[in-house]
Image (cartoon, rainbow, N blue to C red; front, top):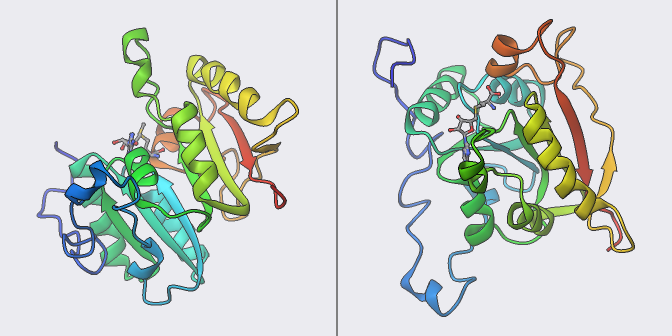
Amino acid sequence: MNLGHGRELDAGEGVIGLSKAEYPPLPDSIVSDPLAGRLDPRRWFRESARRFEIEIGCGKGTFMLNVAQQNPGTNFLGIEWEGAYYAYTADRVRRAGLMNVRMLHADAVEFLKWRCPDAIVDVIHLYYSDPWPKAKHHKNRVVQDRFLEQAHRCLVPGGELRIVTDHDDYWAWMEKYFARWSDGDVKPFERCAFAVPEWVGEGQLVATNYERKMCGDVKTPHATVLRKPVEG
Ligand SMILES: C[S@@+](CC[C@H](N)C(=O)[O-])C[C@H]1O[C@@H](n2cnc3c(N)ncnc32)[C@H](O)[C@@H]1O
């Protein structure tokens, strides 16, 4: 994929990009023990006791660079499954010298399910997730029960899943899942208003590459926060 950088990307393996030693393949014992692949991603950071946030689908990495620069006391894990975008973001992070960011080349939904321990993530950021517009591809959408279940499990009490999309049909789909997960007698999540970070410029919600290119005056994105209650 040509991302217009015109030079070799260096993902900084072992420093920014996760090395194979740090992120080994799932063990064979996963077949009998579904927890056998769990590891603690906070250990990938020099100061592992810090607040820990995940961005799913970093694309070209502008949100990651900004949020990590603005919050130097928080550790951020970016998970991107498209190799070229993973390398592009990791290269930008490396050149910016941000030591509070690690990048993982993987499917974030699978990462949460098989790798991530319970109650360790303060915020999961999911911005402009691929809408997979054709009905036969809807099964690929990130937001569905299996993801919300894992996101809920991995978040700390009081932790937040922050979501923004400009895709009306995907938003309608999401709303059905949000209702299931935040309405009724049992409420795994509390639904909250999306707070725009202070550092984001006028007329934007998260200032990702996609948002800057596709939204602005043309489209008003949808946004919400699902908060895991402190109790329960
Ligand atoms: C439409 S782009 C948006 C990128 C970025 N968030 C932005 O707003 O500019 C969606 C990105 O999410 C990535 N992605 C989609 N599903 C993913 C998954 N399950 N795990 C990790 N990355 C994923 C895609 O490769 C793509 O880079």
